[in-house]
Image: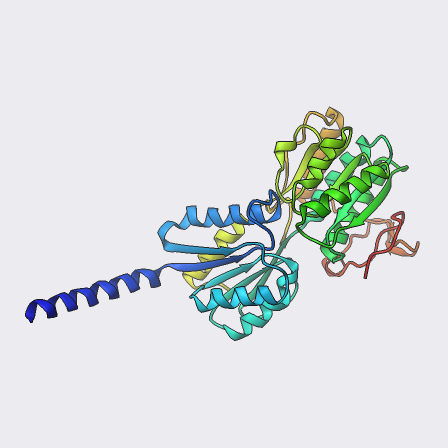
Length: 357
């Protein structure tokens, strides 16, 4: 009888110790819009998750769900993570905005971080990167390298983040090549290799010999490689497997430092709701290696622009700039403010076509 009691007591002590160890771990969830192997957006977010694990070791437990559609499914996944004890949840796509706010209201003790959105709460922070800085560099290279003077752009959804990138790329391509034209195909998806490949093929058929993309897979790179004589730029990730051609450079999203800092803030109790929007300077946006397919002088100019963007001595949206309808947007020397950019819903003068509603 005494042995049984001792065994029971030992089991209880062991259980309490195990529970205490589990409670000491900070549990962090990640909700992904695409698969971790997409080679672009989600791939980079998951690399950052892995960096969190590498940094904190057994002090942290991470979980993720990939390929979560934007909408009710996202809300269900976030709710399940919160119910299973997540202390912090990163929701990594624009369309997760309302689901994040809804779930956060039900779990006030859980911290949420929403990527690329604008709605915040006491337990919801927002964060994004100034991708338009990288688009300026890409536009410069594209304008210098196109031979057909037709640049194709694959858009995902007509939200400010994507419109910023189109305008920035066009402005800087036009600066170095007044004859350049942009042709834009809206894929209405973040990740769908078949749709993305079809969009690239349509643009190439229309004469584009440069393809830029704001979608997440490497399918446009593959389509360009198959076509030949078409250059591309990696999106969100380096996509260097397609270098030196067709991929001549890339925008690389580096989320790891931010994720590590925010997890640390939850651990030490200093987490507060904030809004973060960083670019090349702080390192959230990286410019992938510019391949030798780019002429040396063009490469030097592009790197000089990236350096000026990093130092804050140059802003991609500096007037004089007009809206598509010819009305003045920015006077000479005037720079676009963040509020305007975060709500950007128009093309600049020279871009043809309408932004879908």
